[in-house]
Amino acid sequence: MYRMKTVIYSHAANKQLEALPLPAQDQITTALDTYAVSGRGDIKKLSDRVGYRLRVGAYRVIFSEDLTTVLAVYVGRRGTNTYSRN
Image: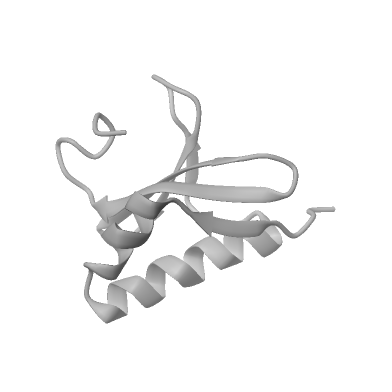
């Protein structure tokens, strides 16, 4: 059974999220909340560092997690520097 987790956005991730169009913000927050509650989503473990990525359409969320928390550290459009920035 999956245990519900708390979603926390880093300061940078929060600013990045707020800069996106409102429909994209809604999609991303819904996808992260769904993952935190059920563990479901388009998730892959990052191969070059610690953490995971959540794919939400053309957007990506880079995050880490522990037993109680999902910490979003990057939110943005998929691009050539998405995985190398953070």
